[in-house]
Amino acid sequence: MTDQTILRSSENDAIATRLREELARRRISRQALADMAKVSLSTLEKALSGSRPFTLTTVVRIEDVLGTPLRRADDTAAAPDAFLAPESMGSYSRPAVRWIEGGYLTLRPAFSQPDAVYAYRTEIFWDTEASHLRFAESERADSSFTQAGFVSMPNLSGHTYLVTSEEGQYRLVMLGRATRERRMFGLLTTLQVGTGSQLVPVACPIALLPLDQAEELRFGLIAPGDPVHGAYRESLAQALASDFCRWYG
Image (cartoon, rainbow, N blue to C red):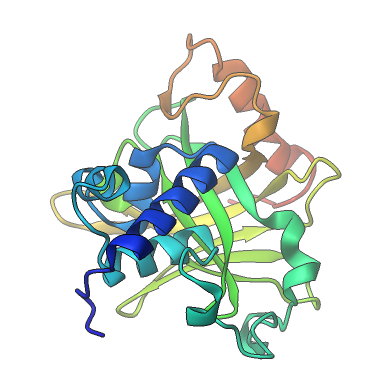
């Protein structure tokens, strides 16, 4: 089959049903899924409604994002080692890392405004085909800078690394051991847009909080005066206050 293979009507109906169930179970919006899978919302909506069949490309992208096969089991049978990550990522097993899978409210300082917090969503999921964890961001105000990549979890350091690697360029989130509440804190290293087209290396604290623990969920630029600013700022401050990362200058 080619990448643009159109699925049969019976397959399309079954996939649409499973996908609607996954969206409801995970509380993911169709727009967020479209952003993470890099497909248009219109394409997703039409496929779910049955007015246009899914293509194999679209289904594979959505399966990669959700970490769940949507096609028949006999078409997606896993190899015996499909639940063990590569040695280069820490050789972790699927059962050992199930606790980290899910959606997270992600907080970091806003680069453009002092004391403001930038909030977006990070989804961590198991990629069955590649046999390792992946992550994908969504709900970013600057959607053109949305990141996605692989998750490394070596036992040696006990840290979790979210790594973006695109054409030789890297972005890294280094997170310390999770708290009992599955909250994770650490350091982000990335590139900030500077003068003109210049990109400037920057680093800052970062926090990932399970979505179901957020009393009020808001994304985007959270400025002082916003109802959730105090809580978000306090959560982010734990990265340094609880020694999950250290800042030297």
